Length: 262
Ligand SMILES: Nc1ncnc2c1ncn2[C@@H]1O[C@H](COP(=O)(O)OP(=O)(O)OP(=O)(O)O)[C@@H](O)[C@H]1O
Ligand SMILES: [Mg+2]
Image (cartoon, rainbow, N blue to C red):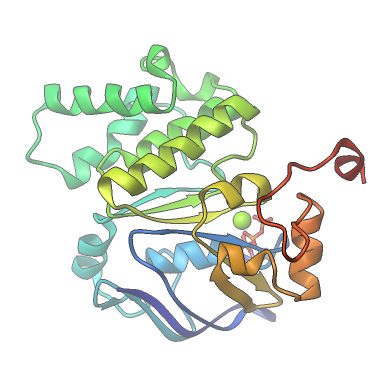
């Protein structure tokens, strides 16, 4: 239901995506990793039609997001929730108003009191209920991230796109967000696409991992296969963050202090 077919995207002379094909496993969690500037955020924006592909197809629930008209885009976007890498919050609105925003646009059937209840429930889930009426402009980076996460899940979307959900979060909050991802997948059957540099967290939540490198998806597969894959780029990427199991040894170890310092 969500598929990229040979998608290319350039900005002037900069060829960001050079032919990416990917079929996303529904009701599962896919993590996309890759170096800074590889085009990970561009990929997410293509999926919701904020950026249009130069060639190829971006198919979401039957619509080609590169060619869809406004009505089609609206119909697809209401099934998605998105956390942008920079948060994309409205600083002049309160936390609760930011989180409520997608409900006003996509759930016109709800009364204001029902919207407020949902907003408070979402803020509980990200551990911020006491900040509901705080101006968003006065939050810390980690608090902003969590407001963005609450806003992304407020409509109970079928597909959740998270661009760096754990960056800037302390380990305890980060674990809570990973728990939220796991429980939403289990109880609501949500499809997650998560862009992340947090490899340790990725191994805990991702069913599949894809690696973007030099404009291509150089690896894609189930997490347990990917951590064993011999691809040297992938291994360097993973090894910096986590000590991988030896062949024949199952289970992951947390990175040692020495490896962290390297
Ligand atoms: N709207 C745009 N106009 C011009 N160039 C862009 C635009 N959006 C992205 N780029 C460029 O495309 C490349 C890929 O950007 P993208 O944001 O997808 O990287 P990324 O993989 O998410 O990196 P990071 O891990 O640092 O977030 C970068 O070189 C970026 O400067
Ligand atoms: Mg990015």
